[in-house]
Image (cartoon, rainbow, N blue to C red; front, top):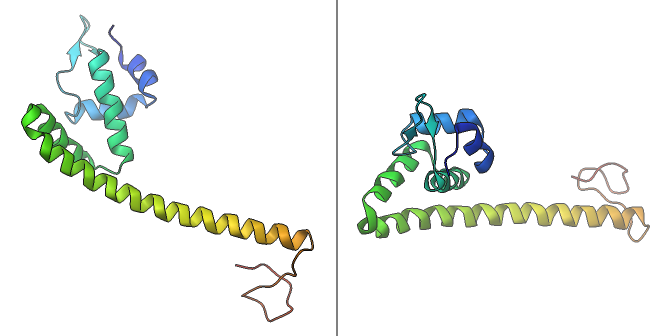
Length: 138
């Protein structure tokens, strides 16, 4: 099956402008054209495009994606290099995930504090106000 640009965008859940940019940057190799010279994509292209979206979400820059593409085009011999590159991205994502989890934990704690105050289980206090003061706790 072949996909037009718009169909590929719908399938990959991305904007037309982004896919066009990726194509113009050379991130989608071997792009085929129909009889009207419009880009068309097959299933393999679509899977690669979905992979590009993931790489972008992982924090890869366009230049890093280009380097990754060049490694992929070398075939099996570049797998060790690709594994290193992806492991570095994974390490950074795990650190970001820990930061996000710490923020979620804080919000959960704060919501619990507010619930306890509103239910009368504890008295309100604030690190920002003099003791006994009424106001928001940071």
